[in-house]
Length: 148
Image (cartoon, rainbow, N blue to C red):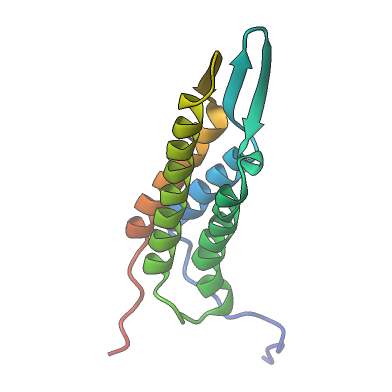
């Protein structure tokens, strides 16, 4: 029987633990575009989403996309160039640091505003939760096979 050059070799079944990190990254990516902070001054109010929080917040969705790519790229190419766990954990940790740094800056901005009330919204919570899940998911994925 002749095989076609376009068929892919069969792969091992996908372990559900490997989907934890990309699912967390997807959750954080969606949370980035939802409202992070609600601002109200007397009777006027507004919501500020993650993409409106300034240049410091914009690497967060890029890090989420890097987590998703790092989780699926070795499976799609069949090669393990980078240690996937380290890449996913580093991207999630960097995203969490950026989000927390943005929160601290927001607190300092709140101190100087007279009469304004701030509250954190669901998008910020989803972003933090998603990045934390991606960080934990980096260590749940099975270790790559050794090259012995």
